[in-house]
Length: 135
Image 1 (tube, one colour):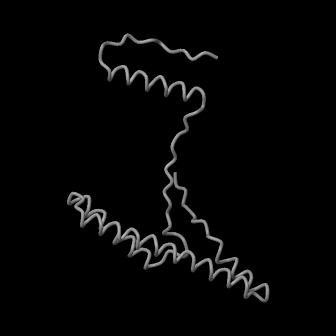
Image 2 (image 1 turned 30 degrees about the vertical axis):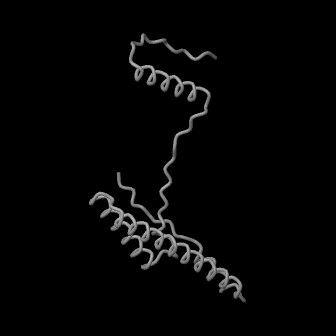
Image 3 (image 1 turned 45 degrees about the horizontal axis):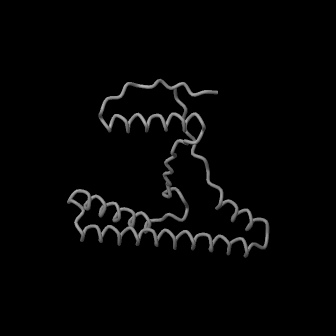
């Protein structure tokens, strides 16, 4: 199967040549299946069971530092503050998540009857939110 491309009449502008080359490469890449659409993965941790008040306050302070940095022109001191808050937030998330799963393992290890086992399983399951479908 041949790719049908019309050769345009180009002037002496190098930007025009570059744009044409870029569009041709993009068309060929799409035709061959080499270009994939980029997926943006936004991780929402706020509904996780291990995400508690400390995580929320650390996230809030990190975002506040980010807004200040953007608003006031990203000065060195503000950037350092933001990076420290970000590092602190990530470390809090890491510790909270690890502690949650360690506690969960302990719950499963300490089950001696079916009731304890199913209580531990119930903590893993998340209930799907019921949405009201009004049209």
